[in-house]
Length: 183
Image (cartoon, rainbow, N blue to C red; front, top):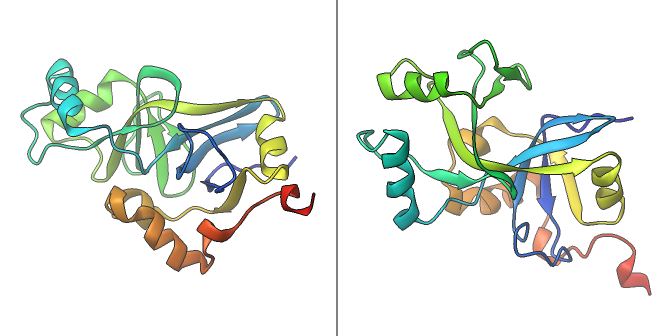
């Protein structure tokens, strides 16, 4: 089995799903039991962010951080992608430069200024059962491409797909994916 961790999933135009349409997902874990990833280009609307920040005690952060819709699974769970230099006892190392934490220690450390230098906070995640992601890729629902640190941490969410298109030199808006166009 090929491991898709530390790669991007780009939703293909044929994926007619309001949750995943025009999504870029960073695959955090992939094994024989399934896969999980974080949508990195869908910020939660600004009117909802302030309430979330107040609830977490992070409203004093300047500038206010963006909070992303990470996916439809466990939407109440905070997941933080961050640079590898920061870690807690529960940090999961995904690559040599990117890690994932989801405990309250990282929230406290961000508030105190001792947290990671680069991070992306998301609520929820995308998940797939055993063999489901492989089948969706084979079906043409997703384009699998190598991840890019700069896209995750240094690119505004509104520019991520545009920058991705220039990096891979493929116009993903005109790809149909799969074999459906042959019938």
